[in-house]
Image (cartoon, rainbow, N blue to C red; front, side, top):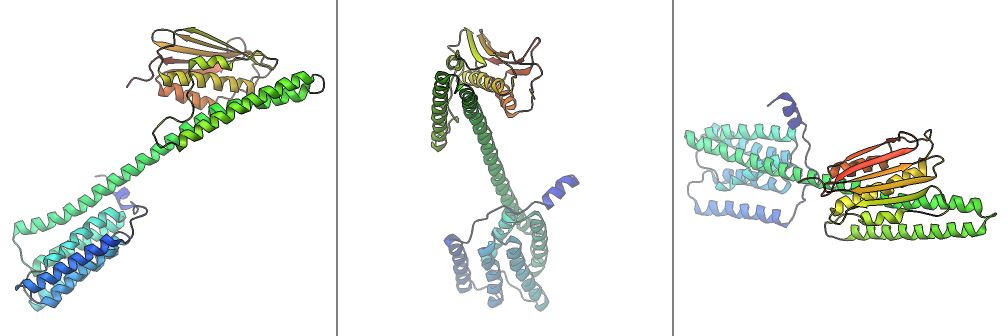
Length: 381
């Protein structure tokens, strides 16, 4: 193991929010206390009894704070047992310890399950020192010694394994939440931003013609009302999906057929022209939704950034293997078309996740072109 890995283990913090003291912990301690008392009553080889009982209680009591203060629990338990064994060695006292000191295995597990890297290393040293001294106080053969060390190493390894598993689960949950946030942000951007952008443009147009053309202002207000109604409906759909416990996709999922609804023939500019050619009946729902969102976001960007644009053309063509969507506008080539916006990032992500390609940039003659090619069935599994 290299020094970087060792430093990483040494710097490992405690797990967050360990469980507090509960009825099961008290029941566990009570069970070990009853076990110790029963041994004192029924076993005749326990001498000196009071000293061995003290050692058993020192191993049992720290179980109550093994999660919140694992190193302190180990120091109190194994430190007391070490002092008792030293006294036994100096006084020549003989006799096996109470079997209830098996509670120390739980402390070894808790040290690696709930302690920091420094605490685990320090506690392991304390446990090793006690094992060495207790084997002097109670001589054992080689196999018994190996078995004793193996038990404690197994308990420590089990604690570390369960800790690692819990850490991986927490990481997976955090990653799932991050993916959900990204997906929700993408849906909110693609749906709400599109309609709000249209509302803003119609409001500007209505204000401009309100005096000279009241009828045009009324038409602009009607368009604003329709866009606001759609925005509210899609927001309610998204909120409804978020409140649903099932694992489902966020937001509404329109398809290629709904792209025609993006077309406009009114007086507001730029006008939107939509052309569909090819067969789209067996498209993957994810691909159909992605094509719609690509077209929708491209139209929104054109309305926001295409200076002097009069028309946006959306062309969707499907063949046996793939679907191509191309969006062109006739805006001024000097317009601000920074490719670093969140909309382009979201479109790139959609195409990439489905195994397709995406390009956006100035057109050869005039305006801006967005082009994406997606496989009909989505990304291969």
